[in-house]
Length: 227
Image (cartoon, rainbow, N blue to C red):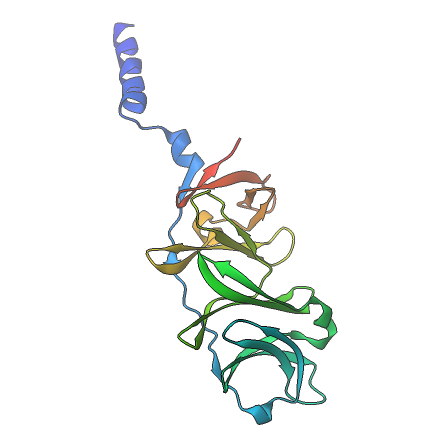
């Protein structure tokens, strides 16, 4: 009996005294962020390639505009004019969704940007965050989703949360700014989950379709299981 008590006390010491707490390990999921490589490029635009300018938006040092390339074209393209130089962003939507085009001055990761967004279908979105420095435009971030832009961990730098897919099978990627660069993490891959969706200030996570969703909150580069 004495040996049994001693053995139990030793186990308690190992798990508590040494800080080994399996429940905390399961409740906290560290996240590995990776640098974002923007595949979209801003390219020179010839004036002859512009059939019709649909909308314009003026910044202090540039004009942002939406245009078509031909009379029959239902695709909408983004353009930038800085002084006498023209640039093309690429697709920003379709004529059917013209009323949902959005161009505005904004900020991203504490940097001034022009935000340009549009749609080509119910599940087809374009979102550009364009920075202009020394009269040269660049794409800071490009998304094919409607993002949540929010300072999730209240550290003064906003995060962008973008979800793709359909109910029950959402893939969610989070973007932020670390070590002077834009980084991202694929939450589905990190959590080995089939469905991840950000809603009501928490991440709803399902490892399998039949599993009940678990709620996680974002901490410092980690997800923490919420009550």
